[in-house]
Length: 241
Image (tube, rainbow, N blue to C red; front, side, top):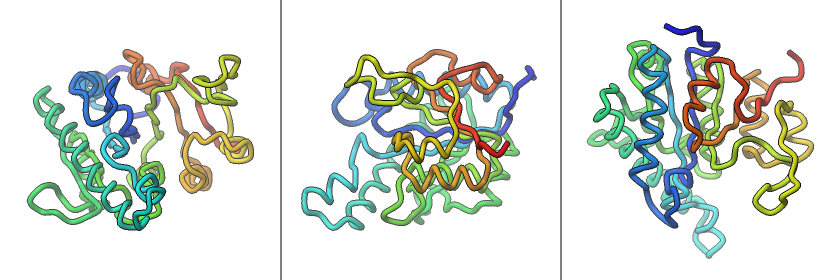
């Protein structure tokens, strides 16, 4: 196996990333691109866990803003993540990657119920393990679910794949002069309110000394390069290290 810096990883994908250039739903070309990126490290024996958002289908916060009960909206968002996870699993398996979907909400006909020890065993057996339905609780984002699962499975790093190639001091889509950070601490992310992840997820990573790399999901070979220890996107570190 090549010399990887990280060998067990948690990859966080936003639901919006799965849309590609569409305004709603799943773009099969994007799913296939993600699958190829994962396979490039899967074939080298890297243990990969994945958390996917559901914003390409339904977002609880937006439902609440339109007058829906927030908890009800969040449950609907959790179901949306399961659709995304099943789509990824199907593509992964067609590319020859053994995979499992584990959900925080029981639905035995569709996926396994999340059990931490079983998830770790799947990873040890070389199965891409896809975590669905967030934490299973309303009022928590899938960013928080990603931070939680990363800590639970003992991941070496949390990788957040977005449409942006790192963390900036302001929104680069709105401010052409936005400055990109190569490295930043979790405390700076919190104090500067950079909105990389929600505050709960950021604090959880900070408290458990979980490094995070934020990079563009669209960049070819970025996942493999990041795991090899090359500079990709922005690295968020614990300032105490």
